[in-house]
Amino acid sequence: MALSNQKEGNLNNKPIQINPAYELKCQYTVEMVPVFQLRVWYRACEVREQINYFSKSLGQTVTKKYQMVCLPTQSDNLQISREVGKTRCTPSFMEISETPREWLVDINNGQTITTMTLLQARSKGYEFTVANNLMTVRAYFTATGIQEFGQLPSDKVLYLADLTLKYDSGFGKITILVLMICVPAPVRCNRMNVIIEVPSFVGTFTNLAIGTRLYLPSLPSSDLSISSQQNMLRITVPKRYPLAQTMACPLGFLTGVKTVLPDTKLTFNVRGTQTSMTFTPVCPCEMKGADPEVLCQDGFMDFEVRSNDTLPPLDLSTVRLRDPTCSPSVASKDSLLFHVPLASCGTTSKVVNGKLVYENEIRALLKDQPLLGVITRDSEYVLTVQCYYDHTADANLIVDVKTNAPPPPAVEQGDLIVVLRAYPDVLYRTPYRDQAYPVVKYLRDPLYLEVQVLNRLDPNIKLVLDDCWATGFPSPSSLPRWNIIVDGCPYDGDNYMTVFHPMSEFLGIPFPSHYRRFEVKMFTFVSGGVLQANSV
Image (tube, rainbow, N blue to C red; front, side, top):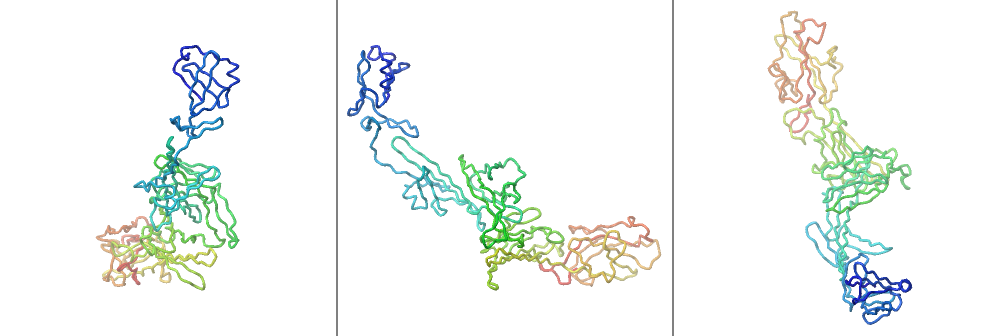
């Protein structure tokens, strides 16, 4: 107990005399500067309990009664003023009687705040428990006020719970802010990497901890990559990551292994408050001998399409699923990563020999593309992906790349006999012979052509090519047709213009003016988005 008096240095205008031995024995103190303050322990000498106060006589020269009230102390050090009549003090404890108050919960759904009691919150999908000096708050994903971020059909959905627990004790207010974030399925894996994906939301990513290693988004690292693409925070961790472990799979996958990362924590700043999400990234078992390009797990099939899967390189912007509204989860210059649900995006299912087979198709067909002309130099591409479910981890990948037959040699007669030859390379040493046809060429491959005047020895003859074109049929007047040379110049309506090779580059040729050599990139004819069967 403590008592202060603003009269400095005296009490009732009389000097205070304290016996030091008595003060030590009775466990009380008196301080004179800057104010008179008396502190008395509950078990001090001559302390006795009266109706509403304790009294104490001081020394031999001064006797005075003081009314002292025991003030309740709070663990949160709240400054509280209480009426004397409501406090009951004893030699060992103090107590006060109050009407019980209820904890309240503010639930923020991102737009409005709803206040309810704990009992009401429990009926809305929340649980509150206390054990081992810890309070646990549980929020189900379907609870009232849970905020969702992310777009279907992607399985990457972030749930945010924003709660404030409030209690007014009468002495003061206690407020506890509870922020929880969770992505139920943040991890997917491919052949080389463990990929962590978190949809963008109202929080700002501040740091990543994998085991004992800490990473900041502002500091590039050689261990992993952190990027934001398509409203998604994406962290790519190579399977060769120093802290990654390879573990044997359980029974049923005795020949397989899985990659496991240490406990991983993502921390975000949500309206000025740091909140974290902790999980253990684990890749599914990979069967030895299974196709590493396709992974079927948890209702999804994961696979990669690379631009170098075809010749010429595939234009990745033309690649589509059966359902063209479903996009790849990751797109780069050289590859596309697909994370396709087994129940949507055009995926079909059937039972074959007791196996449940899911199938989808990736394709880049000319009929699916808007065509600006009558030719194209883009490859067609068909990728069929099948997942077999028969208690194994098998996955089959079938790739069917469609190509076209090479063009036949063209010969046209007139007043002068000329011949059109095709050569295998730019050196123009030996043309293709008849037995070499059909010659296999891929779209955009160079075709080296030569036109020569035959059976003429006149050095004044100069061969000039005014107009050259290609057709889909042997007749030069057939349609469709595509210009190669117009008015002696390369056709400027082609993105891959014809290239002339001057005859001065070739030595030892008699009458070089009788020749014209040029290079054309391979293409194919289309009609209504469909390749012509006899296309060039």
